[in-house]
Structures are given as structure tokens and as C-alpha cells.
Amino acid sequence: MWLILRKRIPLYIVTGWVAITLNFVLPRLMPGNPAELLMSRLNRAGTVPMTSLPALESEFGVDNHHSLLHQYFSYLGQVAHLNLGTSLTYFPQPVSSVIAESLPWTLLLVFTGLVLSWAIGLLLGIGMGWRRGSRTDQLAVPLGAFLSAVPFFLVGLVFVWVFGVVLGWFPINGAYGADVTPGLSPAFIGSWLGHAFLPVLTIVLSSFVAHMLYMRNTMVTVLGDDYVLMAEAKGLSRRRVKYHYAARNAILPSVASFTTALGFVVGGSVLVETVFSYPGIGYALFQAVNGEDYPLMQGIFLVIALAVLVSNLLADVVYAVLDPRSRAQLSA
Image 1 (cartoon, rainbow, N blue to C red):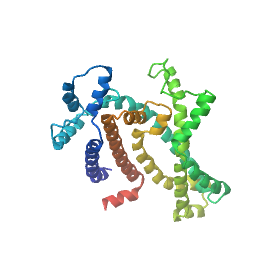
Image 2: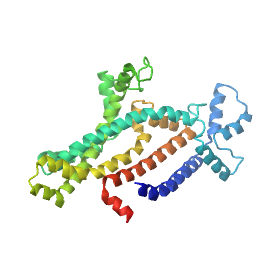
Image 3: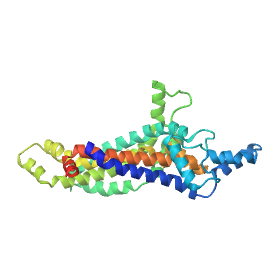
Image 4: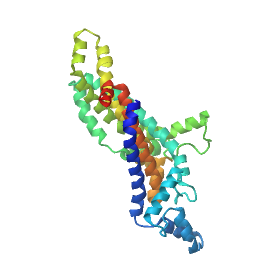
């Protein structure tokens, strides 16, 4: 494992620096000035002197009185101190505070949906691969390909209309009820489960098919290997051959893909959170885009990029731990 970290970490450090640099450059290529935009909003509520504009420009890191290189190094210093600026949408709340409040909800929602969809897809894929060529397999493959093409937001809208509006079984906005206080109390947990049920179900139904088909195809490939044929020739039970020989080796790529997908948990399912007005990172990003909140967009993109890098590094480590062949290749 240490050999992997020693070889991979320098690459990820460079990639992280590139992501931070792009995160600095791209918002400055966009039209508009966040300080001027905030000034116009404040002037709607009352008179704000124009002398406040330089202070706001300095606060939002768009001080035109300094060179772009000076702004860049200033931005690096702010990132090093976890200072991501001030949000326009939630002014005067800092971006780091907005992300800290939104991130736990996304982690709870998307991580739960991701684990469930991966586990369900894994079990179904093992069964389909083992019964390859059967009628069930022949029907499930094209049906799964069709279902995987259905977008998240369409499934979410159907659930909102049927189970939220028509039947009224589940709430369709927020993360918990207004009558409960966040904590570990049974009332709060029950309220969160009720609000998260439809979004989690949307994520599971929209994503488990991809895991199922991937596991099914890997299982079919593994079943043709010599060690599986040898296990069958020895007269071992079908259950032992299925799980201890075939599925155990076929699961390696799926574990790596699951670890990589953890990075996208931070990004959340933007469309799902928007459809259900769920207060996670995805919904905060949607609000930032609508409000032209460049600092908040910049902060969220940076967190997503770093989370993807960490998850890819974790995927390399997990795959090397599970597969001795990859360790041998790295040590060669």
C-alpha cells in the first residue's frame, strides 16, 4: 500500500494544483463582477455608497487594482487557510460555512443511495451472469439498458407527482420536518427517513442498472476462466463455484468503480436535490447558478474536484489490496 501511495501521491498533487488553478481562472473568464452584482442588489433595498465597491471587490477576490498573478497567489493563500470567500446568495455567510451546512445532507442522501444501488446491482448482476443466456438474462439486458438511459430528474418528477402530490404519502421538499430539531432523536431520524425516501429511491432506481450490467458482463467473462472450469471439474457445489470462485474475482472491478464513485457523492445528484428541494451541495450549486454566485460555485467545484481525486487514490489502494497482481505490477 505504501508503494502505491509513494507512486500515486505526486501525480494527484499535481492534478490537484491544476484543479485549483482552473477553479481560479474559469470564474474570471465569465462575464460580470460579483461585487458589482451585490452592489446592485443592496441598492434595491437602500442606498449604498459607491465607495464600498473596492471593499467588496477585495472581499470577493476580484480586486482589479492588482494583477492577475497577485490575485492568483492571494487565492492560493486563501484556499490554504480554507477561506473560500463570501457567498452572494447567502450574504454575508462565508462559502465554507454554506458548504459545511450543505455537505452532510448530501453525504447522507447520496451515499445511502449509492451503497444501496451498488449492493442491489451487484447481487442481481451475479445472478444474471451465472444464468447467462437464460430467458431472464435475455430480457433483463435490453430492459436494463433502457432503464439506465432514463434521467434522474424524470424519475424524481414522477415520484413527486404520484407519491407526493396525488397520494400524499411522502414530503416532497426539505430534509426534515419543521417541527423537529436536528439530532439523534427518534423523531428527527424518522422525519429524515420520510423526507429522504423518495430521493434515495430515485437514485437507486436510476443507478443500480449500470452496476448490474457491469457486474453481469464481468461475471460472464470470469466464468470462462480456467480456474472456474477446474473448480467445476472437481465437483464442487454450484454455490461454492458461484460465490467463492466466480463472484469473488468478478467483484474486483466493481469494488474499484464503487470506490471511484464515492468522489461524486460530494457533488451529489444536483437534479435529484433540485427536484426534491433537498438542502444539499447539489441544491446549493443550483441556487448559486441562479443567483450568479461565483464564489459559491467556485468553492463547490473545488470541493468536488478534490473529493474525486481522493476517491481515485482510494480506488487505487483498494484495488491493490484486493488484487495481488496489481501489487506485483507496481513493485516490478
